[in-house]
Length: 159
Image (cartoon, rainbow, N blue to C red; front, side):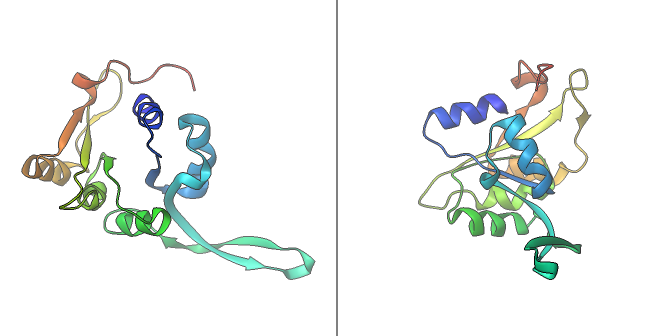
Protein backbone atom coordinates (compact mmCIF):
# COMPACT_ATOMS: atom_id res chain seq x y z
CA UNK A 1 0.00 0.00 0.00
CA UNK A 2 2.83 2.39 0.78
CA UNK A 3 4.34 1.76 -2.65
CA UNK A 4 0.96 2.45 -4.25
CA UNK A 5 0.60 5.72 -2.33
CA UNK A 6 4.07 6.88 -3.40
CA UNK A 7 3.45 5.84 -7.03
CA UNK A 8 0.18 7.76 -7.16
CA UNK A 9 1.74 10.86 -5.58
CA UNK A 10 4.70 10.69 -8.00
CA UNK A 11 2.15 10.74 -10.82
CA UNK A 12 0.21 13.80 -9.68
CA UNK A 13 -2.44 12.22 -7.45
CA UNK A 14 -3.40 13.65 -4.08
CA UNK A 15 -3.96 10.70 -1.77
CA UNK A 16 -6.30 10.43 1.19
CA UNK A 17 -7.05 7.73 3.71
CA UNK A 18 -10.74 7.20 4.47
CA UNK A 19 -10.90 4.85 7.43
CA UNK A 20 -13.52 3.55 9.78
CA UNK A 21 -10.90 4.11 12.49
CA UNK A 22 -10.87 7.18 14.67
CA UNK A 23 -9.47 10.13 12.72
CA UNK A 24 -7.75 11.64 15.76
CA UNK A 25 -5.86 8.38 16.26
CA UNK A 26 -5.24 7.90 12.54
CA UNK A 27 -3.86 11.39 11.87
CA UNK A 28 -0.53 11.12 13.74
CA UNK A 29 -0.15 7.41 12.98
CA UNK A 30 -0.86 7.74 9.25
CA UNK A 31 1.54 10.62 8.80
CA UNK A 32 4.38 8.61 10.33
CA UNK A 33 3.49 5.25 8.75
CA UNK A 34 2.12 6.27 5.35
CA UNK A 35 3.33 9.81 4.78
CA UNK A 36 -0.24 11.13 4.55
CA UNK A 37 -0.62 14.49 6.36
CA UNK A 38 -3.36 14.89 8.99
CA UNK A 39 -5.57 17.08 6.78
CA UNK A 40 -5.91 14.18 4.32
CA UNK A 41 -7.19 11.67 6.88
CA UNK A 42 -10.93 11.02 6.83
CA UNK A 43 -12.17 8.86 9.67
CA UNK A 44 -14.72 8.24 12.36
CA UNK A 45 -14.92 10.77 15.15
CA UNK A 46 -16.20 11.26 18.63
CA UNK A 47 -18.22 14.41 19.05
CA UNK A 48 -16.20 17.48 19.97
CA UNK A 49 -17.33 20.61 21.79
CA UNK A 50 -15.61 23.96 22.27
CA UNK A 51 -15.16 25.30 25.78
CA UNK A 52 -13.79 28.61 27.06
CA UNK A 53 -14.32 27.80 30.74
CA UNK A 54 -11.74 29.21 33.11
CA UNK A 55 -10.29 31.47 30.45
CA UNK A 56 -8.89 28.56 28.44
CA UNK A 57 -9.95 27.88 24.87
CA UNK A 58 -10.09 24.10 24.42
CA UNK A 59 -11.84 21.32 22.56
CA UNK A 60 -13.46 18.57 24.62
CA UNK A 61 -14.41 15.10 23.45
CA UNK A 62 -18.01 14.10 24.02
CA UNK A 63 -19.01 10.62 25.13
CA UNK A 64 -20.72 9.70 21.86
CA UNK A 65 -19.70 9.25 18.24
CA UNK A 66 -20.29 12.20 15.94
CA UNK A 67 -20.06 9.91 12.91
CA UNK A 68 -18.81 6.45 11.99
CA UNK A 69 -16.92 6.60 8.69
CA UNK A 70 -18.06 3.28 7.25
CA UNK A 71 -20.67 1.99 4.83
CA UNK A 72 -22.95 4.68 3.38
CA UNK A 73 -21.38 7.34 5.61
CA UNK A 74 -18.00 6.95 3.88
CA UNK A 75 -18.99 8.65 0.55
CA UNK A 76 -20.67 11.44 2.53
CA UNK A 77 -17.49 12.04 4.53
CA UNK A 78 -15.33 11.89 1.39
CA UNK A 79 -17.52 14.46 -0.36
CA UNK A 80 -17.63 16.74 2.69
CA UNK A 81 -13.82 16.73 2.99
CA UNK A 82 -12.69 16.59 -0.65
CA UNK A 83 -15.62 17.99 -2.63
CA UNK A 84 -15.36 15.47 -5.45
CA UNK A 85 -15.69 11.79 -6.19
CA UNK A 86 -12.55 9.69 -6.10
CA UNK A 87 -11.27 8.36 -9.40
CA UNK A 88 -9.38 5.60 -7.62
CA UNK A 89 -10.66 3.87 -4.49
CA UNK A 90 -9.09 0.98 -2.62
CA UNK A 91 -11.02 -0.90 0.06
CA UNK A 92 -10.89 -4.16 1.96
CA UNK A 93 -14.29 -4.78 3.54
CA UNK A 94 -18.05 -4.72 3.12
CA UNK A 95 -18.01 -1.25 4.70
CA UNK A 96 -16.02 0.01 1.70
CA UNK A 97 -18.62 -1.02 -0.91
CA UNK A 98 -20.42 2.38 -0.92
CA UNK A 99 -17.07 4.21 -1.33
CA UNK A 100 -16.05 1.92 -4.19
CA UNK A 101 -19.45 2.29 -5.85
CA UNK A 102 -19.27 6.09 -5.42
CA UNK A 103 -15.90 6.34 -7.18
CA UNK A 104 -16.19 7.82 -10.68
CA UNK A 105 -19.34 8.55 -12.67
CA UNK A 106 -20.80 7.42 -15.99
CA UNK A 107 -18.73 10.16 -17.64
CA UNK A 108 -15.60 9.72 -15.49
CA UNK A 109 -14.28 6.21 -15.16
CA UNK A 110 -12.73 5.04 -11.90
CA UNK A 111 -10.43 2.29 -10.75
CA UNK A 112 -11.99 0.32 -7.92
CA UNK A 113 -9.62 -2.00 -6.05
CA UNK A 114 -10.56 -4.49 -3.35
CA UNK A 115 -7.84 -6.02 -1.20
CA UNK A 116 -8.19 -9.75 -0.51
CA UNK A 117 -6.49 -10.77 2.73
CA UNK A 118 -5.43 -14.26 1.61
CA UNK A 119 -1.84 -14.60 2.82
CA UNK A 120 -1.76 -16.62 6.04
CA UNK A 121 2.04 -16.81 6.04
CA UNK A 122 2.74 -13.05 5.94
CA UNK A 123 -0.45 -11.54 7.38
CA UNK A 124 -3.90 -12.66 8.46
CA UNK A 125 -5.86 -14.84 6.05
CA UNK A 126 -9.53 -13.85 6.22
CA UNK A 127 -12.52 -12.95 4.16
CA UNK A 128 -14.89 -12.41 7.10
CA UNK A 129 -16.33 -8.94 6.74
CA UNK A 130 -15.59 -8.81 3.01
CA UNK A 131 -17.94 -11.51 1.65
CA UNK A 132 -20.44 -9.05 0.18
CA UNK A 133 -17.65 -6.83 -1.19
CA UNK A 134 -16.10 -9.82 -2.98
CA UNK A 135 -19.47 -10.75 -4.53
CA UNK A 136 -20.07 -7.18 -5.73
CA UNK A 137 -16.49 -6.91 -7.02
CA UNK A 138 -17.14 -9.98 -9.15
CA UNK A 139 -20.50 -8.66 -10.38
CA UNK A 140 -19.20 -5.13 -11.10
CA UNK A 141 -15.84 -6.24 -12.51
CA UNK A 142 -13.85 -4.43 -9.83
CA UNK A 143 -10.19 -5.41 -9.49
CA UNK A 144 -9.48 -7.77 -6.59
CA UNK A 145 -5.89 -7.56 -5.35
CA UNK A 146 -4.55 -10.68 -3.66
CA UNK A 147 -2.02 -10.16 -0.87
CA UNK A 148 -0.72 -13.66 -1.54
CA UNK A 149 -0.40 -13.47 -5.32
CA UNK A 150 -0.01 -9.76 -6.07
CA UNK A 151 2.24 -8.40 -3.30
CA UNK A 152 5.90 -9.31 -3.12
CA UNK A 153 6.25 -7.63 0.30
CA UNK A 154 3.67 -7.40 3.04
CA UNK A 155 5.70 -6.26 6.06
CA UNK A 156 9.18 -4.82 5.71
CA UNK A 157 10.06 -4.95 9.39
CA UNK A 158 10.56 -1.18 9.58
CA UNK A 159 8.22 1.71 10.25
